[in-house]
Image (tube, rainbow, N blue to C red; front, top):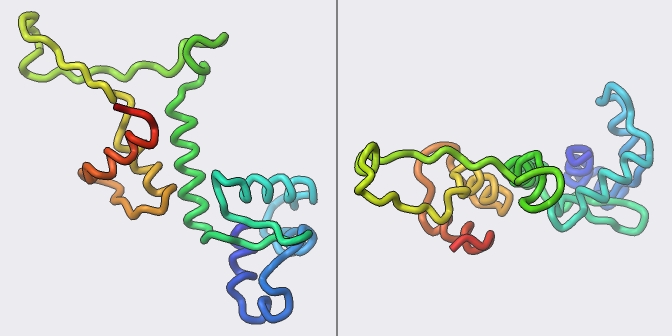
Length: 167
């Protein structure tokens, strides 16, 4: 749907005749040949509502029609960031709630100083749940250009921790 809206919103002919906005029936017509099973109008409406939520901000409603407000790649990055957050919370539910104890605790990495030496105190990592993959997903969802591998900039990690309430 986003690609259909993006194509219409960037096609000079479509813009001249439709100002780049499409209705549910237009979206259905454009996507029916691409999808194995065409979506019905209620499914299209639900998807457009979700894509228009502040979390994704990929579609905007104009009367009874819709227009794309972000490139499909940015909306996809926001969806991946949302998926990373959901996956990071575990399957059992939040701590203290019925149904589970929350996400599993990641294994601690032992350092050479603390391995096998009980006299060396272990350092506590106050942000053990902040992983590079979470920071990358969040950063991409915010529109930052981030490499898939390598060290993350400290200011980006700091910004992530501030936004998510870590130390």
